[in-house]
Length: 240
Image 1 (cartoon, rainbow, N blue to C red):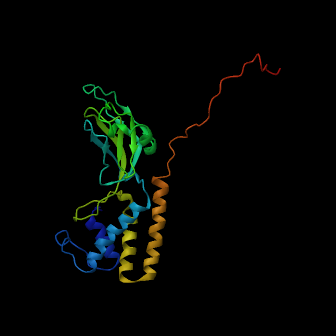
Image 2: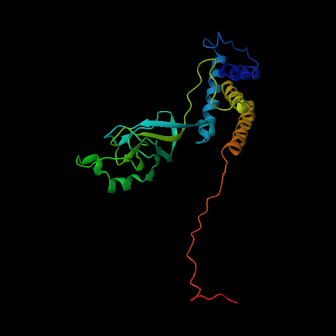
């Protein structure tokens, strides 16, 4: 079974006992067919807002830094950015050995390093710190003195489906979750409260299952034990 915007919309229309759409007539849909198209996007939007870090929305960003510029913007599609993943790409031509950047609190940056933005005598270099700014963008210290390449990872906000052949970012394994949510919205549009509540409950339960499968992952446990030096046996002799 195909997995496109058209296919899921037709699945919802079939559940509602309505006439299905064709690829040629998809963009010119009318009446309740349009509402079912909207319901599919509403369901996908709800799923994406229920969890910040769905793995299927994970991606890697790249920025070519500008010499003398300290502040940069995150992509317009970014929902959340993992600041611990910021790293410079190794580039022997530019004298960059690469490696991760240290996350620095913005207030500490203001207290200790903001002179780099105000004092023209301050020299830039290879960035060592990444700072999340109050407007949810980022800056670097020291500011770059060359066009280094920066990489980082983030989770995206998906764009609404539009064309009949558009494919959801949500894996096809969970197409029934989208269909359940879209069906609930369709019943809501019709004012059929009982059917809406049944489908909405199933929709929410299915999202909870998705969260259990896709987001509750513990790859390993990091030890926080602080090791101490061994005791001096001459002061604390062993007990026989």
